[in-house]
Length: 464
Image (tube, rainbow, N blue to C red):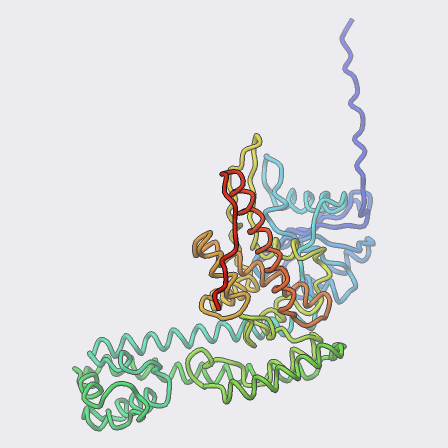
């Protein structure tokens, strides 16, 4: 008698999103999968032209799709995501690392079906995306950041051309794009070769003497290097004009947005600190770190849209605050706590434990622009005479420079989350109270250790 096989029980899938779809996006074609119960042919291929994308959206709407999962593949997903949002379809943008398929043959059809299955059973976690009006400012601000980097490249090319002619002007003048450096470079490009005449163009506030300037401006002029210098100088001027145009565009976009509600205590603290800063700081310098600051009132605009002033946090200047708003917006409700926010920024240890043993505790690699801005802000606290500067120096002595930078950026992230979530201004008194509790714990530990060793701690007698 032949042996009969037992029938395998049918797997019951806990479907949480029955109207979910998955899209595998490429540069030239997109494969989309819907539920097998929704269509006879649940997988379709579309090209990436705009009309084809509109047909894709219409096909999804015909089959009652309300949410679509897609991988964050370069920038190819953006046109489809924007059309889906306009049609009222929810977009679930996921990290490609989180949706790796099971071992087996990899095809575009299998990938989109796998995405659809994971999304339907609720196993996908959507990536954080700020509101639409914030994404518009984010695109402009990222473009501006790229232009600032391009301007630095042009300055480096100017330095290279001067070095090849042995003109060491950028070694005696700190800022080649300042008033003195610009006048001297323009004179060189106009045909002036006399070192004394070029040195006379330097500002009287320069630390270098006239003799040093003359020695630095005596060079071996070559036609090819002068051509490269002219190209770099004109390129830098063009990029600077483009940055000014971007600033004007951003200012117009921000002015058209609806303002946020500002709490009275936040407005009062901002006004008080604004008056104090105006008295102590004076007129801002145009060169150095302030060279590429936006031309519009960044602090006023951010206060209007955030409802709280981020620049009151030590280490956060107007450029950092603008970067944070462009990348995050003013609503951080997508993160359950400051811990989750810091984890999203990759500013906390990524503990790898196996068999009860800690294998690694390094932070995850990340290209998050908000995290980069916070790291730069933390780096600027090295010599700061405030509570966060003291925290950075204490962590540096305890953990080393690299770990101290991450720890300080993590603390800044937690503070930013608290300020934006509560819409309450930053209060340094809270840090002072936490510091007192830390000192009390340290003193308790020292007393306990002294008792263990048979000693007793006594305070130093204050002499009159």
